[in-house]
Image (tube, rainbow, N blue to C red; front, top):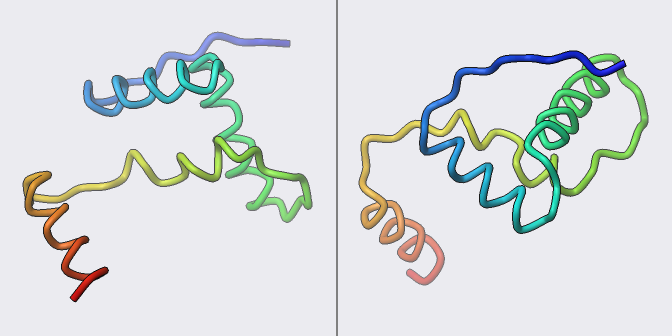
Length: 82
């Protein structure tokens, strides 16, 4: 049985999630459902397969930084190539 749930997220996270959902032709509701299932299945030690979408998005909403995108890109490139 499906039940309605209201979530409050920052606008940037919502926009990124919408683009991702559109790219993979999946609803935001299903995306959130996959994520919650992955959390609860690992918590309960179930051996269910986690969808690739969930693996890729896991942790995306918890990223916090005071650096600009340009600074983050520069840091990543320096780590990789220097």
